[in-house]
Image (cartoon, rainbow, N blue to C red):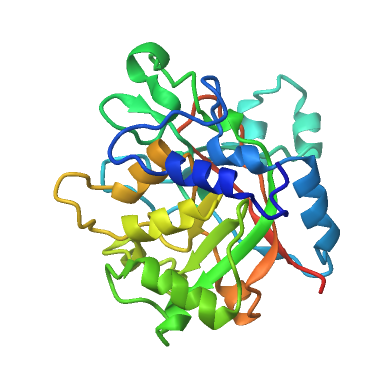
Length: 323
């Protein structure tokens, strides 16, 4: 389906029905084998349409860099980002791991390194196997049938296609006249409609929607991770029912923390990933887009194809649209 085109009433109702469940995983409208949900709205026609309008003379890098001590989601005991040298020029002269002559090691200065990290470090996507309900994930794939000793064999990062789409930036912090939203501010439908009206933009099926909370003003201080202003379930439903194919923000978790639901500690994650079939982009750097007042743009992002992973780093970029 061409995401650049108007969607007829039948498809609108299909999208609304697709997003109507509550605390129950959804079957994909794209069939029992589908693993990418709303990303199915990307096709050759939609890619050509957005790339034809992209002005590549200016490229906005929407990712943060990875470094030791960076903020991240480590509250559940997950691995912070680490990097270490595995080969150094001086070390090779001592260890001679390549089994060559001293003269060769002195001539060839060999450096190498390794990294370890939680797959949700830095700018990254959340895949559908990240959260679900009652042992099941999007499209009714179950942990009992599809989760092995090492990884899921459904809905991993390797299934995600490169995303070429129209991007829309909603400056929620700007709507409220602040640099950074207050801690735990809930972004609901009223905030989103207010941004759309103030910025003079409209949502279309097939959009990547990015929310500016101003949290990157705190980066890289660890205050970035506490009491995050972000999307609530009402806001998530509003965007999903307008046909968003990916939703992201410049904060730690996309959603408001702590959440308001008494039992579901991540109601936006579970809704978008398990019910709506909409992947999530977290820790996007949006400040330059806001400063340039670029509310609509060509979005491109491709995650690392980590087979079975619940998340993967992404290097998204935005290019302004030609008028």
